[in-house]
Image 1 (tube, rainbow, N blue to C red):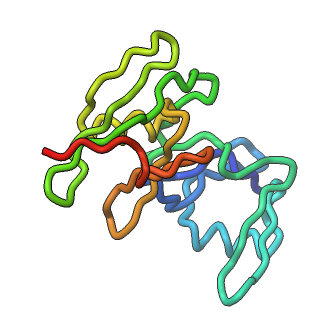
Image 2: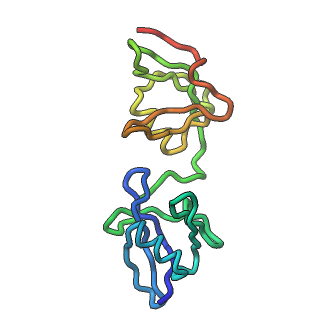
Image 3: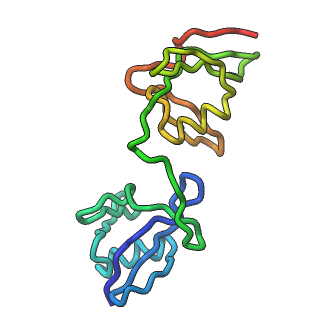
Length: 161
């Protein structure tokens, strides 16, 4: 039986498996480990896999696995940020209380208006790719806001409270 990967099963930002479709059009969800084994055994048409430094690396064939639709473990498609959404915000400053950044100063690129926004709200916007000079990195179950496109968030305007 031959299969095709049609979606990624995600939990937050972590890929936990894949939705596969067989030759008859029947869809099913397999764990990441099962899918990797199937790909190594050449059972998946649109994906290849190989061993590298003791782990399995999967690559899409004529597709990018990261650009596949995302779904939850029940197969429900998760709406994610559309890349056509304009990145209309940028981080221009931060508000620090003690050692923690509690808020960011955000500039709307269309109106040049600046506003203070709580860290959690900025994380949501960055996750949706609405902030042009920042992205989110997960580290030890904590979300970290990182600068991109030449922006070093250590050197932006800082307000201490």
